[in-house]
Image (tube, rainbow, N blue to C red; front, side, top):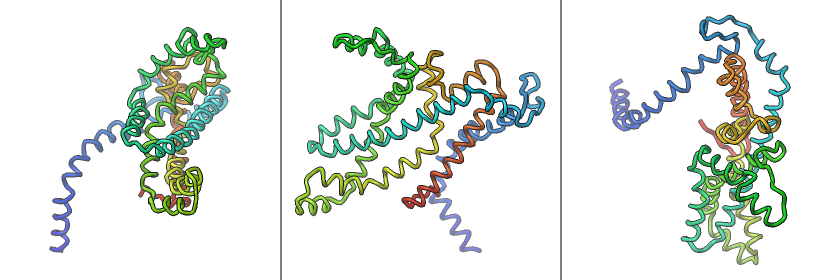
Length: 303
């Protein structure tokens, strides 16, 4: 018993300061992450602000109403479409740029490119949206350039067919710098002896990339891909909300913006809560599936 007490005291003395530093984060997450979960009961009520959580219960009526709305089904399709291509290109583009940067021998040049690629990651979509509206408008610099070479102006932000890809490409541009650094770190950790052996066998740079670099960073690519599957219903509220308009609702409206309009702007709190709960449940299921796949495929475990 005395030994156990001493062991506990040593553990507290060794690890106690870390728990103290962690405590404010735990409090913030509890206040803003767990306490609001009680609000999910609104999804099963006909919520009335005057009555609060004493509003009448309606069971699954809100969910039946949702899935009976054609526009809600469109938002699911749009969300999966936009988020899916963001995930796919969010893997391909950073891997490609990491491979290209790895071919640069001058360290200072490589650092300049890393900085330039990474800078947009720190800018909020409020700032970038304002820049994009100015650049991609019909009178913007992009359409002015297209006009100089004989191409008619392209309505990037108001055409329902073009808008989703405008969102996908701009999001990949904003975030690929972070992924590039991750994959570049994975590349630099590869044993140089493998390249030396391949060079001695007559392999050129392309063959070294195909048969050494890509297979060696394969686990990192697979891990990043699998972990991103849990966010398949997160197509980027802040980006789309700052850039979309009623003209592109048919292809650009996602679940998060739909919840915002219903729950905040139109005060349909119960319907908005039902959409949010559905999205949360799907995200939780996909997260567990992705963790299971990550463990089975590459042996990765969070806990």
